[in-house]
Amino acid sequence: AQSVTQLDSHVSVSEGTPVLLRCNYSSSYSPSLFWYVQHPNKGLQLLLKYTSAATLVKGINGFEAEFKKSETSFHLTKPSAHMSDAAEYFCVVSPSGSARQLTFGSGTQLTVLP
Amino acid sequence: KAGVTQTPRYLIKTRGQQVTLSCSPISGHRSVSWYQQTPGQGLQFLFEYFSETQRNKGNFPGRFSGRQFSNSRSEMNVSTLELGDSALYLCASSLGNIDYGYTFGSGTRLTVV
Image 1 (cartoon, chains in turn brown, purple):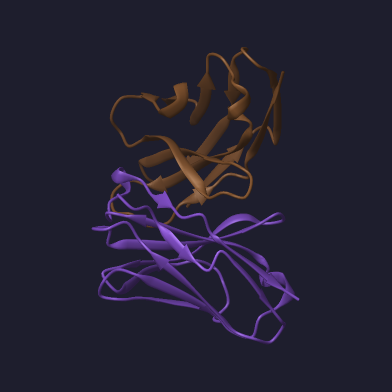
Image 2 (cartoon, chains in turn yellow, brown):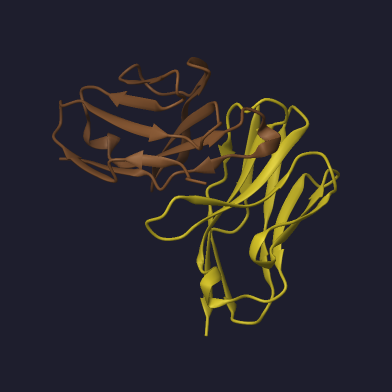
């Protein structure tokens, strides 16, 4: 069984300040972990993925995440927020190996203030 | 390289009708998955197909079904529509191994009235 908990349903930051979106996971298997972003009325875009290689994963648009097995966490960070980062972010877990079923967190809505 | 294409983008149906949604994956991708997104339940897995075989199924009633064709295109069908089926239905394609991740389409917005 696997599950994902996104610890904040809403996060608000000022433009140019750091972003931290928190995610904890639970998985019976060695997991693969993903962060996806969804802009209004759009599909999901992959930001980054962890698949048992380096624990610090760099993604698109300056985002990165660190896999911490001891803390079962996979928090998403960005050093400096941009207005275009305003969107909903989903942390996702799946058993590693063949593509099966993704389990999504409930999402974090990021607001970026001018 | 074309992305994942879902048609139609928007649909309005009445209760009791049935609907078919289509998904064309990225060329070369053999895995297609379907997800339902609603404000109340979030994103929930419906089913996954690989090389025309259903490999995994989520916890949805039998009114929800799908299939995959030899060219990897997939369709999902919902029969006897209920108001609660109103949702954004997302399709995702993959090479078949989770390490490659999934690419999602823009979705089909289904409204049941």
